[in-house]
Image (tube, rainbow, N blue to C red; front, top):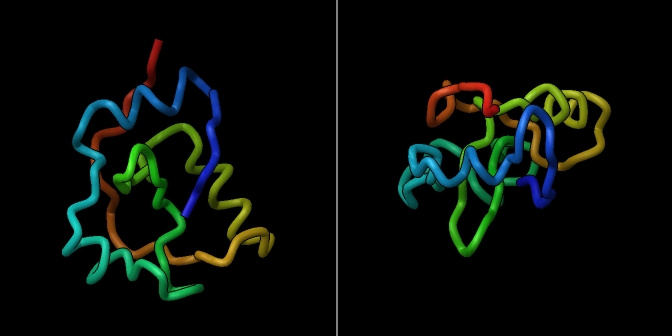
Amino acid sequence: MIGIGIEEDGKLIDYLKDGDRKIPNAHLKSVCNYAQKDKTCRYIMKYEDNFYCIKKTPVKKMVDEGATKNMMVAKGDNCEGLGTYYKKN
């Protein structure tokens, strides 16, 4: 789970506000494997008491690098991701 505020190609917060990235509780448990250590999806971000998918955002590359360099516990890549990738202006 990512707990960072990053700006790259726009503010990450803007991606969260589109609503399509909010992870439903059932998906969080059954697909994202929340709280299952290295099986947990690495693209989970908590924001304002909700969980969001940041796989289809500009920070994906950085998250992937962190997972491959063992900089994070969550290493899962469990689905195609939620939301649509688009570049913020």
